[in-house]
Image (cartoon, rainbow, N blue to C red; front, side, top):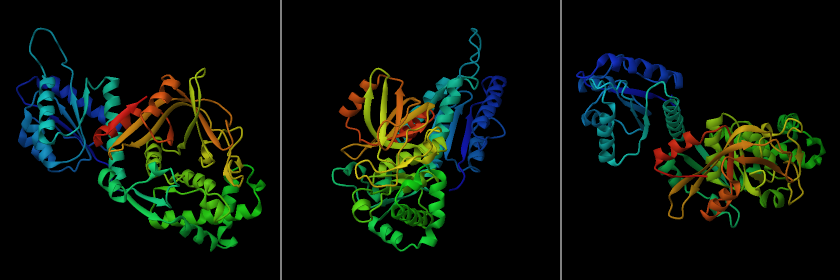
Length: 446
């Protein structure tokens, strides 16, 4: 992927108080560079259309932060829009002095003019921030827009894979390649699960030795798995790893049951766990939009995320427990137990991961939801992950939610959300809201 390029466009006219405008320019540049050093900034205030055109000739933005240093008419925003189709954050400066004297900047009137042009041009969605460069909420708004725009660009270089079809009754996880490309710019390829099973069967013990050692090194109790299943796991891990590397796959959604139990005799759970620790978003039950949700969470947090079902509610603790059969990344495991290996809880065949996840003080639960009419929406809630042992056979994580957990469950069930969610380390709802806004998606914040 080419480098992400955010661009600062500070416009105005020379009839306002330029000393005040210059101070705001200097403070704004300092703030933007502290958020992302890649910001392209002009060497001076853009106080005419000629200045603006000359600056824009040399940039290819992935995000534009358009700021009214002073009032500027709609022609300035029109000049930007006719050149570029990228996310825009409109930034209004607070009037620096209210003393009964001269209006120094009049940035707010300029913002109304620019916003009216944005809507009139193509009803374009845009982010908005009001305030001076010293205000924390301004920094937060710009930071969220930068993260969202960077993600939006990165998705256009993402290649995903659907490995097998969803099981019967799990159709919510299916996706069309044309839909993913059209909406997100993501390339989706498909392969049958049996093809990777056959690749795994063809691998010799010698070829799989390093994968066997790797799993043993990253887990605890792997040696308690029957030898045949350990060897078959290593073969499967090699087959998946080779496929991911050779095809440039960044995220995948894999069929798991019943094929890997009935046709291969060994589950794919721990393979998906290992891939997540390698930076590949790997969802089970062939949930493509679950895998894309995982990938987005991994980009924001820089580490693996938990993927699972909401299975338990505790009103007293105000918690929701998320669980799945055993595909969580090893690095998510509690430090006192480590990444314990057990068996898949329903089929009683291993290896599958079997541990509770470590606590972290800030967490975001996220899902790309698909509407019956084909539209998209984002599920979002924030809270913390509690220090809890394994709740059920398989892998589990307990989230204490900021808002009442029972209300969250009742409202999200009635809203018809899919049963797979992603738990991300850190509070990143602001960036996800900004991303949803760039796509024009509904945000359902619980």
